[in-house]
Length: 339
Length: 260
Image (cartoon, rainbow over all chains, first blue to last red; front, side, top):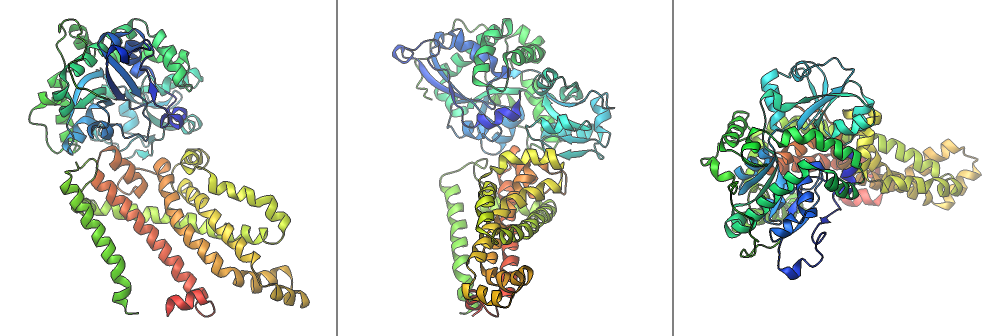
């Protein structure tokens, strides 16, 4: 949300939540871990803040430091190289970086539905994503991302003019003919509050729907610290359950750390992202739940788009999640996890 | 000095650096997403040669356009500021702003003002390349021989004649130095501009290729594109150097010594 403004502060800000609810955390011997976010505090990370504010991380024996990301923070490389034990990447990023020597394992998929979308001005002539993609419009997007190649394959896109995607919204606001990549609950919400009416075309409706905002660790970290990883996932599930029930407390906390996004905008975004976090799978299992079928579909799609040379032999090995009825959360003290 | 003796040291240093790079990747088993081998970079450049050739051309056009504007404006502004201490004191701090401005933050605004494509790229390149030309032109104008200035005064030479026949020639070595610095900076400015304003596609400039490769964890292609951007910078620097040599070779010690 308000990525343009946030981006200037994102690089410098590291937000420590450790001890927010319990200043005496270390004396109780919690396991310290850090999580590299891929953006600044906003509702897509609401479950983390809720888990901290509700004391869920503390109950799980974790002392969690959340590190803000930004457009120039190489989050995936930081996690894959072991600089931080946990972090947030997209499903496509996980597959790409693993093919190039990484060993990331997905633990929790925040979004069952990919929030990536293309927005146009409401007064523009395009009523659907297909209409837009078959036109000669100018679209500001990350042109080499798999979803763009997917849309090009599906709808042609020969006449489109793809231009560099920056986080700034001023270009879009000033140019009524411009289309722009966005997250359905982010930029459109900001513009709605600025009385700039837009039409939003979610990319997932085209059939390309990777897991997004995925909590990952490395295979080595998971093998050495299974209890810490289990505790993190269990706590995050509870955090998200709490955030979905009432996001206002976590949003107020995040808004203090992200001055570019008001509490009002965060509350609206939380409402709009809900249908992407919850679906049949999460209702029958747990929030953040992943399936091998979904990962396999993504790998096959990326392979057919030329974004992945090989489909991983053991697709089940790229994600790990504790069962839903895994009993009460046990403090993760037996592991040797460090931040 | 024999040509081989001139060429050998840089070739040896580059070869040793590449060898160390290759050894480091192998010895420390550095994964490809962090650092590719030199061989992987060369392979990526070869496989993507068409796209990268167009990228080099587009970046070279953007950087050259920005450099040309910076050169013309820089010499003009430096010459005007050199006319009086009052003007210099008044406007020089403003020109310093060009040096201090964080281009990465400014570039998105340039796109709003100028739209997508080469105009914003050229403007970005011109902004970063302008200051060294102004500063060196001004320095040159300030160091003109006083006796010659008085001689021109005795002959009641006009402002234009004084500038054309005395100040500009006397400042040329300093101006050429400023242009050399500006040549490298123009490429950096063009790449930053391309990050936010370039068109994508098969003929996208190197800045766009770098961003795309980075997002796909194609470090091999990214390093290749960065290397080619450096070659564009070297080429522009070489052209300026050659131009400077042509202008100065007959009378200035710096050009004569380099051609000896």
